[in-house]
Length: 330
Image (tube, rainbow, N blue to C red):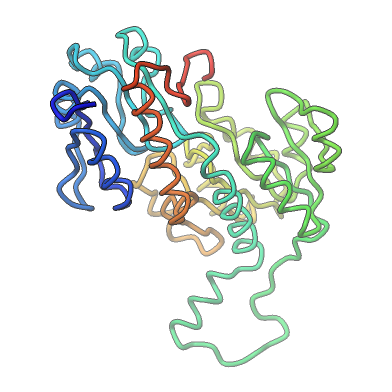
């Protein structure tokens, strides 16, 4: 494609440098001015009016109202990330705008983080680290920082897609018993490989597990899937870990129950209201909070960028992007 005919691409956030360099070689790219720069709603709308392709991230909400102001130039939203719940895909398709994502890239990284959170919560790792950093450790004691052994515990995985299955493989290596609830039951050979038990009833699974891992996407049907009623089914000794989407858990209800000791602990990498974290949740000693680090590896973020580039390049060549998102998939 000649320079004059190159697609106009706007990227809402700074991406890894090799990804940006390759984009600039292929397209007419507008990048965010700095790593701290965040486009607000009006700036994203303006970018959509000026661009053939918009490359947003999970923190950029693109709703029907914004798409209605986009004009006729925008033809592709090439999302940098697998989740697309922040984009109104239905409205985009109605306006003739394609949406693509980057599936499969962060599976292993997110599964690693899930196990890290399970261990951090059950073994009280942040509490120990805080004492060491404060210089308050007075030596080993038989009853200090007693956590729980993960081997033999029942792990209930809510959402048994790519990431859920990767979590199950890791958990088996730690000696955990694998249980899961999913919209569709896995094929028998996969269940056998993972030594996983399917629960048709989420309520029954939740009430019997020692650890709950949330690995389901955010959709209208999964919003507050772990609501106050369902959280109350958990055993007081159980912990819950979420590395998928914050909206799947009723965060206020979870906070109340953690404060009351009705749930033993939680490990959260995602939150219902983005970076606006409930101060009461932040103050709890039995909670491990991370700043959405599940996909934060150099390798993962580079591979995400490569998928974005392939989706845009395929579209520019007149073909369907390989990672096209259809409303029927949601």
